[in-house]
Length: 137
Image 1 (cartoon, rainbow, N blue to C red):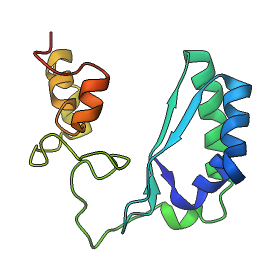
Image 2: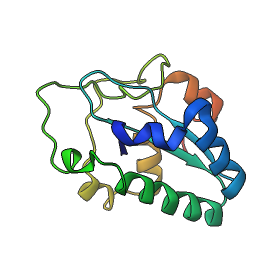
Image 3: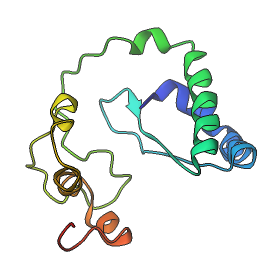
C-alpha cells in the first residue's frame, strides 16, 4: 500500500520509472486504479525473491521521500469503501458480503482455509486467470 501522492514517482512519466525498475530488477510493477475517497493505492510486484527484495527497497525509499508522507501516517476515513474496491476495474469481488479477516486472526488459520478465504475478494476474472475455481486442496 502506497500513498497516492507517491505513486506518480513510482510510475514515472509515460511509465518510464516502472520500465526502468523492471529492467533494473526484473520485477513487474502494477498499481491499482484510484478509488474515490481513498488516499492510498495498491502496488503489486511480481518476480523472483531477489528481484522483489531489490524492488521493494527501491519503492520504500521512493515512498519515504514523498513530501506528503506525513499526511498519510494517521488516516481516518468518513466513507465506507466496499470490500474489493481495488479490483483494477474488474467486475468486483466474488462475495462482497464476506467478512474481513483480521491479520491477527490469519495466523490461526490453516493454509487451505486462508486460500479459501482469499477467493472471496477476488473478481471472477482473477479467479479464472489463476485457476482459483473449484475446490481448494
